[in-house]
Image 1: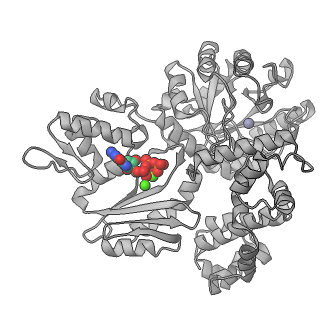
Image 2: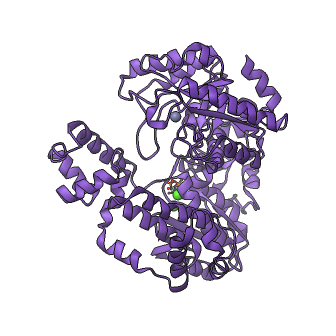
Image 3: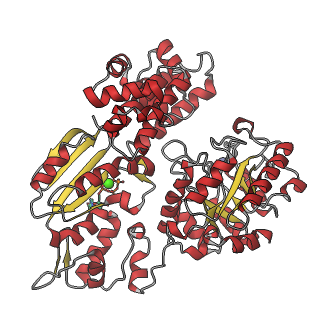
Length: 570
Ligand code: DGT
Ligand code: CA
Ligand code: CA
Ligand code: ZN
């Protein structure tokens, strides 16, 4: 068995143990080993035989022997046993907000709840409220959560999509006879969430490539298998569509399968207006078809500048392209630093030094540390004494770095119920910058919540507003708030707003990021990193910014260290 598949087995074991209510550390060990395995660059077999695998951080001796067994024999009795004895319907229950492994175990043991349908039925008939540790409020919340999960269906977040599609893309690209290949669909457009994965390739003979695709180790079930296309279900339940075309059709097919559907319809209408017919294989004129090697050729043939995939939502991009006014979209390499990050001083997993080193390794010139404030007890929020200690630690670190790199002293300061901040002014004044976020009282009315946040936005100590709606993609809607009013207040007060780049949040979303930037609000792309690996999530924020049509100029953290220092003093 190869390492990608082993990693999935370990993850699944970790999750199954979780819903059985096993010790959290034991469950974590499986997920950590899976992560470590995915990050390994080299040949697994040789690392098993020379024992070096056991020394990889996150793996260790017990996991090593399980991995070795899976790699050599392709199975593991403990895994089979877990699958046999755990109802598969328990796993989706983990997605219900507020339902942790402990509660799931209770529900299963006391009420035999083993699926989302069981859970809904029990909540609707009031069977959950009387359970110890639940109550009427929890029961109502559970019901709300089940409805939410049903409404989002089987969509996945971008990070999950990336993890799933990358090995498949590589496997397709590596097939003999493949000329060009690419991811299409919402994944290519950087959709907030992804329904299914779409892959396109060109070749003189697609048949053997499609045949190889349906046999990939990632594939759990073949849904359809023809000479030029196949649809499969991956082990995680996600659908993946593959299509093959001839190379002279590639540009048309790439454009078509990248969508969006609304963009495609607008493009087809435009083609018709100009006397053409556009479909997924060709742009046909009256007499002959127009050859296009790439998408830029296709757009040009219709009198348009190239439209980057992120913008293809029929949200004004065709007008812009017609006027040759497509903005030069920000890229990951434009980013020089980032501001909203946590360390083990609050709820992060890495030390100050480790975070700084990880930022440097990514080529960043500055890193803002914004640990939680004192009211955020659940997240290890910093008392005033701890804040002062952290300032000293940061000063020491900066002295070491000299001019080459700087750690900024920030805070992710809770916005209290009345819109005031969680530290007195004299402490706020000591930070280089302040990210203000809502982490409590999500149930306030729209009016009160909007007032609360606007008050914080107008506070002169607030540099930027953090995750403005508090939504968690595929898990929880944001709180009810008039986001446009907040954006207007931010524009007036010259307070920045973050694009929280965590793939769980993407908050601001691209539509509101576009509105905010139009009003002149400076945007900061922040990964909200809770580990060194979390810094890499900056790229999902770049996806939002590009979808919003933002240029480097409109984003704070594309500025040089010297410029940012000047801006933060103001
Ligand atoms: P998803 O999978 O729900 O996240 O969204 P997409 O955009 O990836 O949609 P998908 O996988 O159903 O189809 C891929 C692309 O194929 C889509 O973006 C545009 C194109 N497409 C699919 N159905 C239609 C259609 O009925 N008309 C047109 N014009 N294009 C379509
Ligand atoms: Ca799709
Ligand atoms: Ca599809
Ligand atoms: Zn936060």
